Amino acid sequence: MQPDSKADSQSARSFIEQARRAQIIDAAITTIADSGYSSASMAQIAKTAGISRGLISYHFANKDELIAQLVIKVYTDAGEYMGARVSTESTPAGQLREYIASNLDYMAVHPKGIIALVEIFSSGALANLPGIDASEGEEQSLAPVVEVFERGQQLGQFADFNPRFMAQALRNVIDGVSPHLSDPQLDLEMYKQQIITMFERATGAQHPSEEVPET
Image (cartoon, rainbow, N blue to C red; front, side, top):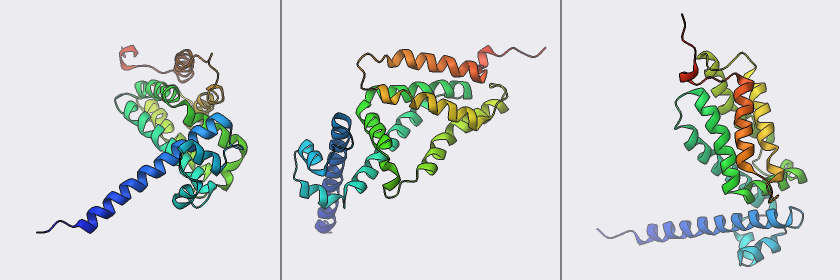
């Protein structure tokens, strides 16, 4: 049986194209984070990537498509990072703590990706990006937290409150840290602990070991 050289060639080409697209997206993140969205032209992104502008056009039809893929990548990477951390906790109270901790830790590890998102959002560009639905994205980001709050209430680990309202409040507080990531004086560890304390108190979170047994 002869090896399928055509299939191997296509697979190698696909891998190279994926790697090149990832390189361009990373360059776009760096350019936007360092220079701002309005200054991040395709030519400047190409310069950051060390490639020709024409090569970017080969992989992305225009700037809007490139930025849309950037947004998707940052959200996907953050979601996978946080999901892996949250899944290690078996209780809603523990999941709440880890959701907050992993979100702030991701910001610490990947600040430029978050800064780039802030630049894109504040520019108003999000509305023009193909395949991006801002309202749908917001609901998807809130859904896991709402689920944690609802399960915690069912198990008696959280007080009585509106889960969606509390999830929105939590996202607002965490997202409020993002615009300050370029500040070298920002203490993310302090913010992380304060946000955890704030929402454990706001939700009345009780870890199983803290629950008062019924008499």
